[in-house]
Image (cartoon, rainbow, N blue to C red; front, side, top):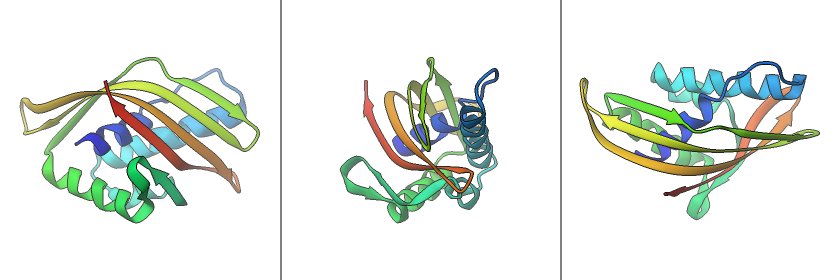
Length: 138
């Protein structure tokens, strides 16, 4: 649930009025959110770099398995974000935010958690890719 929540959080940071690199990053995040909401783990993973690393040495393959498991385990996943701080430095970016995540059945959530997330992004040939994510429960 935690990984799915964090990953969903990464996807809901769409905004407007930003410079071009930030606009493209926010569009990537929105596309990743849409992929998760539509339960398409493979489409979500298109936004993840081959050399991704996360908490506890999590690599891209393990992340993909965790996303798939969370989509199977939760009929519904909900997410509420705090303000996102986006810093773009050339072809790299950092996005920080808090997220309240819920998951479970069709009507009422069965699980909930609050997370602090820091994510690293890299522009690879015009496409932002998530190469690092760290999350901790608050």
